[in-house]
Amino acid sequence: MTLPMDDSPQIVIDRVTHLYRPPRGREVIALEDISLEVRRREFVALLGPSGCGKSTLLYLIGGFLPTETGAIRVDGEQVAGPGPDRGIVFQHFALFPWKTVRQNVLYGLEKLRLGREERSRRAQALIDLVGLRDFAESYPAQLSGGMKQRTAIARTLAIDPQILLMDEPFGALDAQTRRLMQAELLGIWQRSPKTVIFVTHDVHEAVYLAERVVVLSARPGQVKAIVDTGLDRSDPGLFRSRPFIDKVDQIWALVRDEALKAQAGHAP
Amino acid sequence: MKLAVRYVPLLLLALAWEAAARLELSDALPAPSAVLVAWARLARDGELVANGLPSLYRAGTGLILAIALGSVLGVVMAWWRPLHALMSPLLELSYPVPKSALVPLTAFWLGFGNASKVLAIFLGGTLPVVLGAFNGARSSDRALVWSARSMGASRVRTLWDVVVPCALPELLAGIRIALALSFVLLLTTELYAAQSGLGYLISFLGDEGAYDAMFAAVLTVAFLGFVADRLFLRLTRRLLRWRE
Image (cartoon, rainbow over all chains, first blue to last red; front, side, top):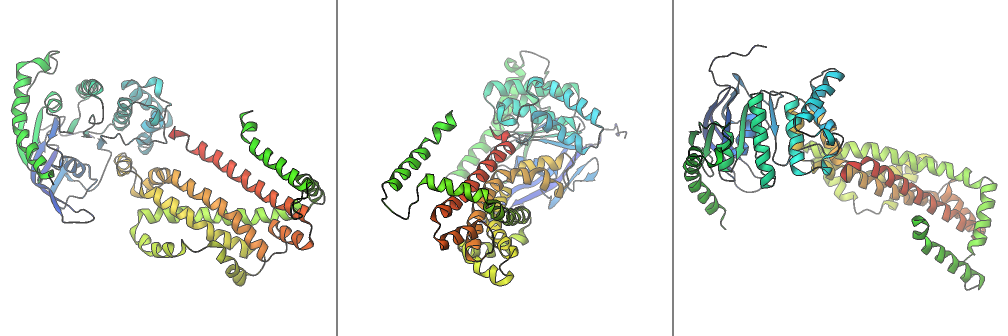
């Protein structure tokens, strides 16, 4: 399959509104009139306070939830359900606890109907990539949080999706591990560019990783601003550089009001 | 060694029992030594095998049917709401019913042969298996199902790949209850009306006044129940070894 090399966006989110219906109680507008376009191989962060619907938007793109109002198209086709073109990594890893690291990574490869040798070769390559060679036969319960998330990333990369959906993937990790994983993810993305949509509420993380940061407002989630980061990520002193700090400040100013609103919304 | 130490209290109980019997504190209490002799006689005469095999057949068949139907029903109930709506009032109603109340009914429906006993054990055992499978399947993580779907598994496929393994711990706990219940129902059905089986042997020996032998038969049932439970626990640990 040859992909069109033009500049047409790979993901088009067109005026999407999403209602959340709790089992009891009134329905809530989770997302309101969201429009967004994502280019091929672009790294986009969805940033917003908790409860703003950023994860919901990711699940809609993934096809896990049905889009009822508006439309989401990937490569020109309406999203109708989950598919291996869109891999996902969850905050709490979502590994199959009854499978070893290797078996987890093999799962998607088995669905691809590859030959046995090709499967095990690719699984081993991914396990090596995330540095888990010595833990390949361990069960998730025997791994640290960082190792679990490495496994989940390897499992998703194994099926080589064009689009990587990441739902606060480093949110459950300690600060040091999170820093390391961010750098690793960036390295992986630079070596084999994919379209990445990365949900986070961490401004530093968003500015460090993404080429564009989409700031969502507190519930109902709307696109409040889209900011190009335009930073040189090869700079080892990036975190201390003026442009980085300025970007963080600029985006933090946008998010701050929304975070306060979200907090007020949570007050009893 | 550890195992031996663990069962010291049982040995003490046996010694106290022996002493009580020797002192003739009660004539309804045959001495363990006498029970052992009676047990050896029952074994030699082939009574234990002749009655044990039909009992194992009934309990085994009833239990396997209960596990097969109960697991499928429980998992599908968690996955497909209409079946849940259909089944849950029935389950709620039958939950508090003492399962031994089934015994006269199944005997009335199916007579005094194997079928009535298998049916009672099947009906009684299905309930805990369904509840275990249902609760386990319902607690399966949405993110796991979604992960499988995004890696190319169809909706139905995720049932087997994700929901069933998620349900396994609670399902196995339900099966363990069904296993214990199957012994209760086996004995009840065989005491009620039977021409063979360990329950029949117990009631027959009791009627004859052969209390040594009756005790031997009771202990045989207790021992079988214990062994079955231990074996099942080992199987459970093996199947769930990923949980450490």
